[in-house]
Length: 154
Image (cartoon, rainbow, N blue to C red; front, side, top):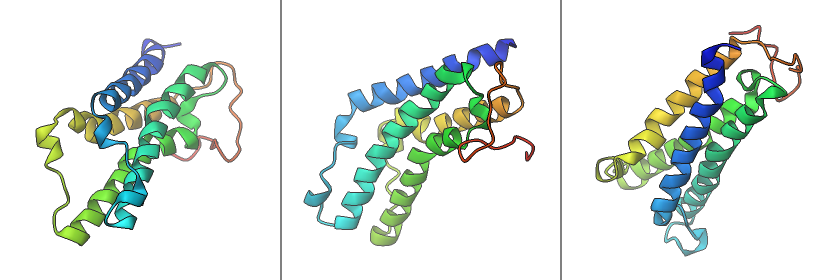
């Protein structure tokens, strides 16, 4: 196993830990009761973003930790989970932009840690996925089913 391959689980775990610490530091950003929102659709998008946050925080790291069984770089689940939060967040910002005329990016200036979680962390996850796609599974157990692709299409 190459040195970079051995660092991939550590990089993913560190990124996941940062997501956890941000959640613990700013719970008011994530805990939403969608039924109490004046705009029901906005409430549900915010609630969905909280679920997506946990998916992005936990699934990519879990897949790298379980990487001895398969290569997360071949996993569609990995890349889908890594972009769950940024995807829902994009929908939220677009909705705010169309609804209010303001996409709501001021929090990135007021709370710069969100620059990492909203912009840099997805890039880290994408790079880990790309590097993983170029490696072969150490156990050879990568299967071609709905969670995995054959790796031939790059």
